[in-house]
Length: 568
Image (cartoon, rainbow, N blue to C red):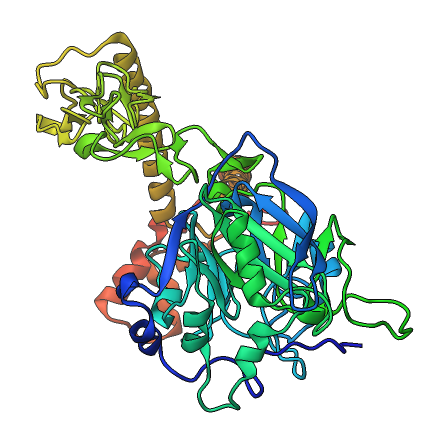
């Protein structure tokens, strides 16, 4: 029902004055320091915490009253105490209000109690909040009593400037705001705290009433050994419990050195292993019962945790202690065993010691690689052959004269010589040279000679083949093939022979006929025509030439013929 409300301020929360005002108004014996620091305990051989239920009698004008409560002693605050947001991370940013039981159970708290103040209407978390090294919110310099644990385990109580809250040289890993500094260095500090935290603009007496009224209370402090003390008492405003003066006196009598007051009244709650162990003052819907209130931040006592929880990424958290991996050291495993300049100019420190640059070896990287080795720490073996030298940095082979290739296993090709076969032979007619010296007067080994013979034979064959192809390509293509010419020639020869035979046959026949004619055929020429008689009778006398011709014609035509029948 949220019916037991105990507010330190009537309107708003916290004073309006600056940190300088707080510093100036405090007793001169404290100088300029507005807070107290104390080295926390780090006992590892004891339980995480010890919780006790107590009953004490408090005297008052009515004869006295009994007060019930819980006091929890934490032996290793740095690793076992956390400030939790309501319901878990981002609870404040979302203005959540969650019961202590729910928050504690989710976080695995062994013991838990309510912590900082909150706005009962908006549920806003009030004051500074740092949870497990994460700044959830800062108050903007609001001057209320603070409790925090720094990274080195220092416990801090008192008033802090905004710069001190945000300081990263030794940052807070846990921080929460209360109202009223109860004990300072073993002395009750309530009177000075009221002056430091009183808001002059609001109604007079509200903060004084907050300190003087009897109610349920929650507080946090430490003893002389640096053990953290969580304190919670049951009560009900104006009926049961303690006022702040009685609370401070009780804590002082129990060895507390510095302590601040946290949210009380109906918010005062104590939980063991996720279960309610206190008697809240708020009524449930049925007034016969009491219910715990939904509140904001929580102080949680848990099993030991390493800071940071992951041991800087170089170890394992075992019972609150970082067990470092090989090569790492320190409480948080954040320091290498190997530290510069242990590795000199040719190496760097690592988890495994010095990591040497390529070409160097040794514990401190001061020795060069032995022949045949290269790379980081000279761990790689060179693959160079034929006596080649190996670059200790990259492992590249420098081939001797006569060889080439990545591993120098290949003999120089014909026509080249020298280291890595980089030079060309200068012999006449492009003859090969000695692959090592480049001498043209070289005797090549049997395999090379055989290779040259095979190459020459192959080359000659290729040349002849090429010549023949060129000759065939340049030769004119005949109109008739060789076979056609042979056929034609044969036909012509046959015709010629046939013609010759025919002529021979004809000649033979003609010769036989001529001989027969000479014996039997004689032309008949009358005698009267002999010596031109007939010519004279037929016509005039012709020229002598013509006469002579006729007269001489007997030399051709006047051949004797035998007389025909009936004639002489």
